[in-house]
Length: 221
Image: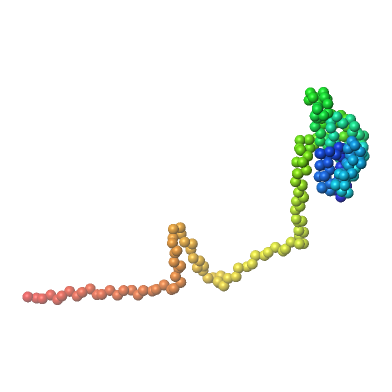
């Protein structure tokens, strides 16, 4: 990968899957070098469609130019892949084995080898990886674009942060010697208790009692 984040992808076999991978790669901003078994001149139309990020080449040139290389050819053509320029590179194998097309390959028929293991035998110094072998090329082309990575906002420096807020002192006109006249909180179940009266208490004068009645004077006979 270059300093611009662009990867050069070599493609050996530019059919349905290979051509679709090329389109997706160019759409993501990568360089592609396309090849097939019929020669670079047969890829002129596809290259024109893809634009300046695409070029046509031979299979050996695509293997040489690619930082990673997509191998999208029939299993029966594995022996035609140039092995030397793929040494140390990822080789992305998209193929599947079809006996009616590829012929009878005993190790694949019996399950002794997978098709990717067979490709690894032909490319002993490459890093073979299986990709895209179980998806229809139209479905691959319809996959949504990868979203841009989310970035967190920059953390402000201490110089940019506002000064801490200081608590404001509570103003009070009450003297320090004035007793508190706080209203008690109403108890549970009380209904709208009346506020305490601030009027001075009423002083009642003592009730004057009547003197006991005077007994009648005794009458002598």
